[in-house]
Length: 129
Image (cartoon, rainbow, N blue to C red):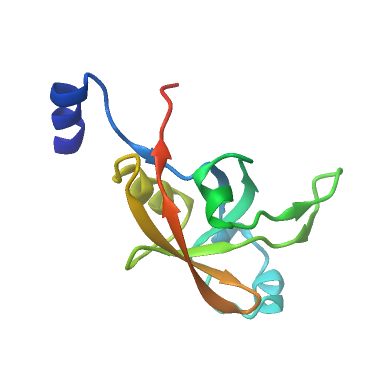
């Protein structure tokens, strides 16, 4: 709340960051899907889609592959940490990124190809709804 108040005073509106990706709670996935990619925990946020010009795309974040009938064909990156903070799911991930100001660089730890990978992301401004 304090950051938002400071932003309003300084910039006239809140300065919150975004990733430019659609996320889903890993806990919503079937256990066999997690086992198939070598993940034993149901914590994290699955990347469903990545905006083409968004911060996630520019950092190399990989989206899931979903068929035209809505079935998951391949899991995308699973976000495990934002900087050093482990995330429980979609909400935690969005909240942690939103705490960053546009232009700040953060490190995402993602699960990809059965191992953790770190991506540097320059946060973009969150557009008002």
